[in-house]
Each structure stands twice: as structure tokens, then as C-alpha cells.
Amino acid sequence: MANIKSAQKRILVTKRNRLQNRFYKSSVRTLTKMFLKTVDGYKISQNPDEKIKAQKILSSVYSLIDKGSKRNVFHKNTAARKKSKLASYLKAA
Image (cartoon, rainbow, N blue to C red):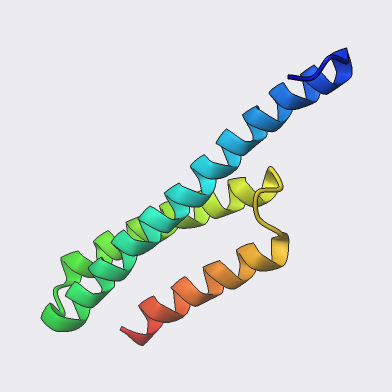
């Protein structure tokens, strides 16, 4: 454990930031997997309900990516690349 007060504070800040980063990254991964699964289901069935569901999931993924980018979890170009990739999956379906 650190003896210097500023080092102790940095440990707390690092822990807080690590948890925040982990939340955003894992949530984006989970929602991306859900989105891809829904898009695959839509490709097979061509059911309009599946497409609406995929669009709702896509908007929530966009929201999380944007919030993560705002909090410096993702670099802005990484966020743009992730969003572009997801949009192209939906468009291809």
C-alpha cells in the first residue's frame, strides 16, 4: 500500500476509472453480440419486428459508445469505427 497521500488518492481514482471503463466496454460488447444475433435472425426470417428490435438495440449501443467516448473510455475514432461497422451490418441485412 502506498504511504504518500497523493498516491493513495491515485489508487482510489484508478480503481474508480477501471470499474467505469470495464462497465462501458463489457456493456458495448454484450449489446453488440445481442445486435448481431438479432440481425442474423432478421436475415433468416425477414420479419419486420426483428428489424425494429435490431434498430432499438443499435440505438442503445450507439448511446453507450457515445457515452464511453465522452468519458474517454473509447477514442473518438474507435467509437466512430464501431458505430460504422454496426450500421453496415444492419444495412447489409
